[in-house]
Image 1 (spheres, rainbow, N blue to C red):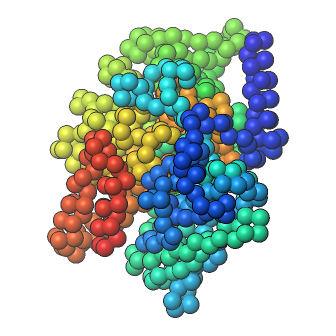
Image 2: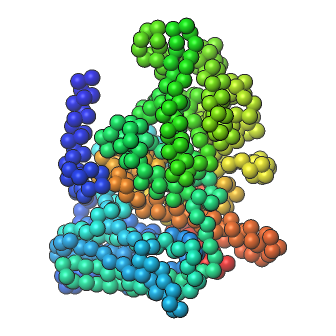
Image 3: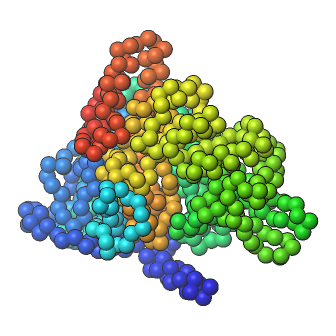
Length: 585
């Protein structure tokens, strides 16, 4: 206990230093880049003035080196649907230090007096975080030590600080996003972004052609996005008591950001530590289990109810996924009144002890969910467990209520298919076509996931950014209804500076950073979700109009997006060609 307490004190001290005593939203110091500088890249730069240019969202530009000219452009031209969020990045580089660099954006002007307001345009300095690499076997799984992997500093987080100092011989990317209002008139809109460095102002022109199509609001997207949330990580990062008012206040901007990405699922826990402490922050139970002195059970749903109601208020309300009846360590914690303390049961599915522990809870949980009006949107959720164990759990669930829904993220198991409402398969293990079609006809969520297993495509901090957008396109190609990834915010010890983790490849555990700060990966993931929605909308329009040519163009456009394609062709190249076609339809 003493060692654990000392460790907490050290961590808090480190966090205070990182955040300059201003909390997770404050500025912080990046780690030094362990790789050598390409001095020739800077020697080729003429003059010590401010250099600016548009770059590519497919590239993680190196902080230590000057950018290569072939990836740069003096202007940017984009196409967008009404209601779509689009983005680019531009670069600032210099051979002399710059202080207090800031960015200014103005409204985009249309040819007929219409505008895209300045409030729809945001910028953020891209920040650098430590990353590592894949294993020798080409995956990102397994326990790892930093000294055994090639580590580097990579661009990923998108900052919320409004000005930044830039050191000499340093490249600084800036992310630019435009949320095109749904009511925008079609046409071409022009504007500039201005970079102010100590009174020296440079401008970059750009234009956006708004097409005569409308993307619905994220809450109305059909794409079934399931990024697992970690309330415990936010409590740790902000130093607040779990489930206090301060905790919910701290979580709000993160969950709003998640809702704006089209998130559909609420991650809830039935028990303490369903994943055997594999995360930096152990998941606590949202339900308090109490074994009474007379041997009966009581269940306190206070935290569960607060969490679900809170997430619904954020706009995330399609599904409540409850983990897990089959934890990795088969340990079930509860409070024993007779002993006057917390204790635990270790029981395997199928054993009498397991059934005696779970059946009363499931019976009570069904009553509670029906009283709250949540039964039809709640699932008992499991990730990959032995099929025999899942079948034993299923028998108890069905005994509690034959209509209780189940969700599973794992391999395809034919004997379980008709019992799994929300079925998410590993990317390399597709559904049989007839099964997929039957599930889609029933309207059951049928999705895929990536995890540490896949070298490509993936969303590690060293993954090519376009691979995050690839996920939406692959879902459309396969006919899936969405995508699952753990996790949205299972932060490591110092997530702003170092995305490496003891168990998986860097960035595996989170998309967004404390602040809250978005990331290149997260923005590109949402880009792919939007593209999926555009494809869905066009397919429905073409089908209603019996436009076979339009449907054929969509199918041809999607044909390259097999899950193995990024191993041989960069995802950015695949997307560039496909998006050119999509914007003509």
